[in-house]
Image (cartoon, rainbow, N blue to C red; front, top):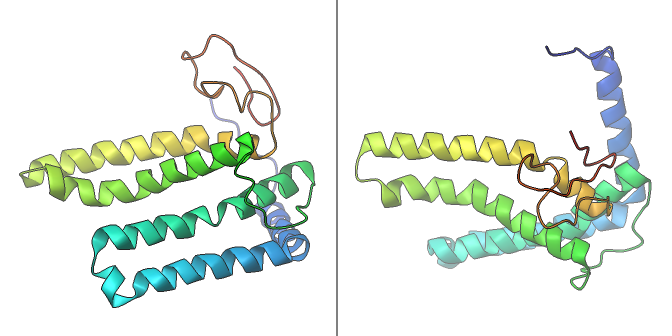
Length: 184
């Protein structure tokens, strides 16, 4: 049986508004760098010579997504642990950054590949519908499972760096518990 929240909706909206205000003040330079970098890759991808080539346009879209990873880590760390990042660094050598980059690439694939797959694989309209529904269900499943996992990586929570995510029941014999990755 589902339980309902005792918090009024206005309190939730006020909390979100306050967090956005804190992010805009404490991560101002990182947000400017992230948005400017993503905008540059989006503008390059929109150049007619590049946008006409589907593969090249997708590569620039992916690069624009990758430049946002340090900003995502900074947001998670600020909201969860109260730690404000001192700069916009690509710490490629850290496990945290590598995992976030990998999951970002996975989410990017999950968002973009289904757009091209039904027309490329399915010879009929019925098969396209089946593939689209199956991919949509897979996307919902993945997003729900990984919503807690990515912030857990950003704050180095126990269980976030195990071989198999702790949020996946039945697949891991070693389960850890933390505020970000509860075990059942």
